[in-house]
Amino acid sequence: MPVVVFYGEESYLLDEAVVKLRQEVVNPAMASLCHRIYTQPNLSTVLEAVGSVSLALGGQTLIEIRDFPMLFQASKDAGTDAQLEELKSLLVSVEATKIVLFVSSKVDGKIKFPKWLVKHPQFQVQKFEPFKFWETDRAADFLIKDAGRKGISLLPEAAELLVESLGTGLRLLVSEVDKLALYADNRAITRNDVVLLCNHSDNLFHLLDRWILQQSPTDNFRDLSEILLKHHAVEVFARAQTYFNNIFRVLWLNHKGASMDTIAQRTGQKPFTITKHLRNFRGVPMARWMALKHQLVELEWKAKTGQLEGTLALETLLGT
Image (cartoon, rainbow, N blue to C red; front, side, top):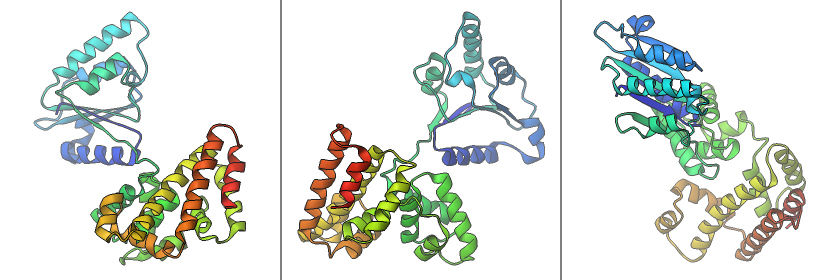
């Protein structure tokens, strides 16, 4: 793999991949000779680095090029185009003792050079995309596995609360798990640990739980005001729809007599998530679920079509 391209907005996974490649390739005793990092280099510097002779003395040299502007900026003149063609020739003929690694948060596939780079069949290309904000189960599963890889025991309900509270950004989540592990001191991290130590000031999901259960209306309006300082009303509606529908589907199937396995298969949710939803919301009458679902759809539509201002639509929803 003489040429490797790691790119994408999920910085935690991208950085982990870079560290792993460094460990596989770079001899620590010869790091000063066989590992070079270039951050936002110009085209001439990249040409010189890729075309240089490997100094690994029988091993491998890693040339790490980070945030190369030509991956997201179009060429502006014939001279630059000529240099890019020269770079292409060098990359397809990189010596076996050298690995050229491009690392970037963004790559514009509409521009000629980056499109060629990520589509080349001989190059190893990997894109690291963040989880969507509704992919809470996937994020929780990842967090549990990542913690286990480090020897940290993270209980499913604790992982779920972390994701629901902080979102699906992995760097923040992993940082919180690391802090919780210090507090837990070799025992499993529990939901109570998360409640005690983590910041829940932007917890839309707790607000929605209280709305469904008709609890703490004053707190709900206060929390909504804080949330709307950071998120647009349309985004809040989208997250609310996803969260509400995940719970509604579980309760509806349970109401129809479906088994746990059937609910898991039909909804794609994990057993611990289904169990939590049934435990928390089994007492809510089905008539209320239907009324809330109708209100959520109607008010979101009015907010999106301009019939009702977004904040007012959300406040109306909380009054349901």
